[in-house]
Image 1 (cartoon, rainbow, N blue to C red):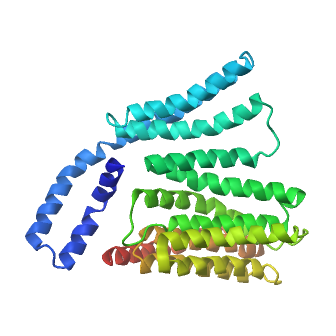
Image 2: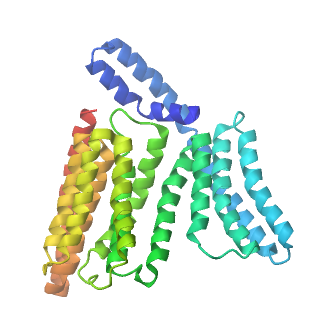
Image 3: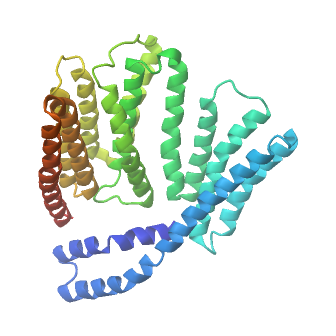
Length: 383
C-alpha cells in the first residue's frame, strides 16, 4: 500500500508543484529544485516497469499452469484429494503473498491477486466435488465476498478491481436467473446494459481533484477498460429492433430498476459527494436514450450519442481530468463512424463511399485530434 501510494504521488509531482507555485507556497527556485530532483528520480522509476511486466506475465503463467495441472489430473484424483488441492492452491498463494509482504511488496500484491482469482476456481471446483449446482450466482457471490475481504485487509489495487467486477457480475447473474427466458429480451437486456454502463462511469469518475487514492485509481482503470464494450452493448440494447418481450413480475421489475439506478448513483454519492449530480445526469442520459428507441427516427439516437460524448468531454474539462476528454473524443468519433456506415455509405456508390470514408478519416480525424489536444492542454492547465 505504501509503495503504491508513493508511485501514485511520484507520477503527479509536476501537478502538485504547479499548484504550490501558483498558490505562493513555494518560490521559483524551490520549484526548480523539486523538478530537478524528481526528474533525476524518473529514470529509476521507469526501471521498475520491466519488473511490473515480469510480475504480470509471471502471475498469468503461474495461474495458467495451476489450471492446466488440475485439469490434466482431475479425473485421477479422489474427492478428498481434490478438495485438499483446492485448499492448498488458494491458501498457499495467499500465504506466499504474506511471506513476501516485507521482502518484495510487488510480489506480494501479485500472489494475493492470483490467490483471489484462484478462489473463484476453488469455489467452482468445490461445487463440482460435492455436486452443488442449484444456484450458480451464489458461487460468484461467495467469490465477491472473498475478494471484498481481501480488499479490506490488504487495500491492494487488484483486490479493489476484482470486487468492482465481481459484485456486478453476481447481480447480473441473479437478474438472469430471476428472469429466466426473459433475461435476453428487450427489457432484461436494457436493464443490464444501462446499469452496467452507469456503474462503469461511476468507476471511471472516481478520482476527483482532492481524492486520488490508489483504490480510486483502480476503479478508474476498471471503468475505463470496461466502458467501451459496455457502451457497444448499450447501443445494441437501445436499437430499434429490441422492441419485443414481456415484462418480468412487478417485484422483480422494481428490484431490477432500483439496482440499475440506485447502485451506480449511491456509489457515486459515496465517492464524489455533491459532485455526484453529474453521474445522475449520465443516468438520465441513458434513460432518454432508451426512450428514443420508441420514436420512428434513425438520426436522433446518433445526435444523442454525440451529445453524450460532448457532455463527457465537458465533464473532463470541468474537473481537469484528461482521461474523460479522451474517452469522450473516442465516443464522438465512434458515433460519427457508425452514422456514416449505417446512414450514408449505403446511399452512395462504391467509389464515392470509399472516398467519403477516407476523407472522413483524414479530415475528421485531424480536426478531432487537434481539438482533443487543445482541450487536454487546457484541462491540465487548470490543475
